[in-house]
Image (cartoon, rainbow, N blue to C red):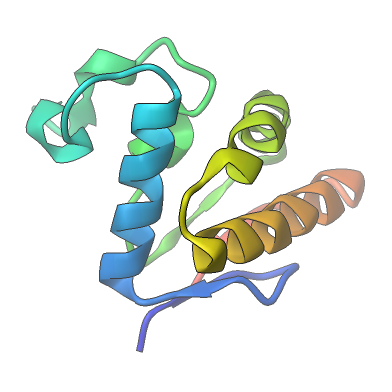
Length: 112
């Protein structure tokens, strides 16, 4: 079990994907736990950040639009190589490649 995506082979356990997003949140310059800042259905502290669509996304389903991915890709390209965990770095790079493929084809990236 876990989360998979269209357009790439990235895979995380649900809890692992949560940890991946928490570490990105901290690398993006926010302090504390991503989930501490969840109020009324949104991660309010990061609302204006380019990675907000990823921070505010379900851990298990849904999609990202080409517009959202285009917004996020420059920041992901910068932060993913800085992740401490090699599994997260590797899967993060696959996720970036999948997003690039989806954007190039004007398609959504589906979470499965």
